[in-house]
Length: 183
Image (cartoon, rainbow, N blue to C red; front, side, top):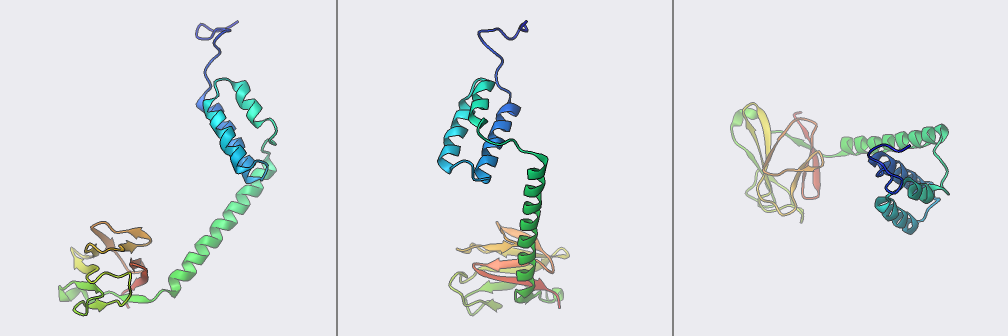
């Protein structure tokens, strides 16, 4: 017997969970090398256009179902890969040249750029003439981008306007990167 919302001529619409499960099986098939990229794209398009569960079953019938062991293996590989990336970043951060924060009592900001009149002159083609300014305001250090061409970054994120910085942060001016230090 069918419900009042479902008739034999019009079966229930696919749920997002069913579609997501099929798409995950297709992504896993690519990751395992069982599907080519072109086949994956075509099947993904068909899965997104599917109206019935049978269509999704047909798209994933030749792919192995995920078991607990493969989930554990993929999770372990992902954890190790993530650890090596974090380790490499930490190693590179320790090897960065230090940029000493000026004494906060001076009340003056430190201008950074290629221009010889700046307090910190960086002679690199990716650094603008007047690139950024580092100042002590309201009890904290503030790094302000001064409309540089190649941007100013704090811990890998581009500064739009100004950003609060502290000791140990990685700051970049164009392609030149430093680690802030108070020592």
